[in-house]
Amino acid sequence: MTILITGATGQIGSELMPALAALYGAENIIALGHKRKPSSDLGGCRYFSLDIRDQAGLQELVQSYQVDTIFHLASLLSAVAESNPQQAWDININGLINVLESARKYQCGVFFPSSIGAFGPNTPKQNTPQDTLQRPNTLYGISKLSGELLCDYYHQHYGLDTRGLRFPGLISYRTAPGGGTTDYAVEIFAAAVQDQPYQCFLAADTQLDMMYMPDAIAAIIKLMQADSSHLQHRNAFNISAMSFTPQQLADEIKKHYPDFTIHYQIDPLRQSIADSWPQQMSDSAARIEWGWRAEYDLPAMVIDMLQHMRKRLC
Ligand code: AKB
Image (spheres, rainbow, N blue to C red):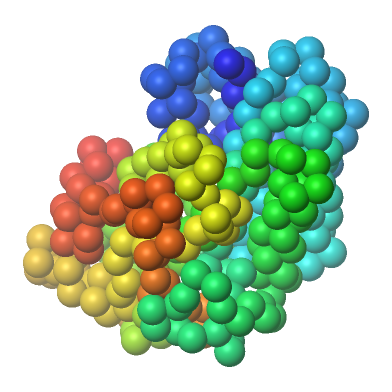
């Protein structure tokens, strides 16, 4: 079994890599990064620097290492995508097509991360159904929805085992996210443990779906190990864990750091992106089809994040 992870140096990749190495052996993992340098400790995984738009380079790696499964995490996040839509389309869509074409040629399974961004302003915001109206109005959202559909297409037409999840905002302490709309929910912890006030770029009452990284990693692994015959929504499962506003997160942090303060300086771009997203998705299809259940709620996540951020920064 050989696994290839694109975007392996990013927020999800840097945590998925050791989790997969522990399960399948580091010698069977090939990590691809591009812009961000990998950490010095790759735990024995092989590392290559490759632009995901380099189709020939990708195919050569997939062929020569006889890759079975590709976890395709390389992508631009919502706010950076919106500031350079053409580049975002190039990386998010042409990168995915390169992955799907390599998978088609060499018969690999593919994991694709979609997002709450694949929904739009007229999608129901609460208890967002698995199957519902999707008219995203950001380039990021358009690329995520197109990705879901492309993965469906390659499954239906070429029989590829493609699978995917719609992630909420992800909160983690190992690698910072780069250029997302939900990044405030990571930045706030760095400020809190260093006894600094936090200036938030979203309004106090902006409610969004969120998830702690250990749950996200467990979800990826559980979905990829699930019996394929049980998967009806194979490429775009809603998964949900907690939903809160910046003020609610700050109030939870204050229980541990009573002097912590938050101020609001709204960034109109990221606010408008957040306002177009669901506040809490229904994850009933994931629960029924492959037994999904989150471990961390808001209080448990805050305790764990503060502990790890303290260790890293103080
Ligand atoms: C972002 O904010 O762009 C991502 C996401 C929710 O897809 N974290």
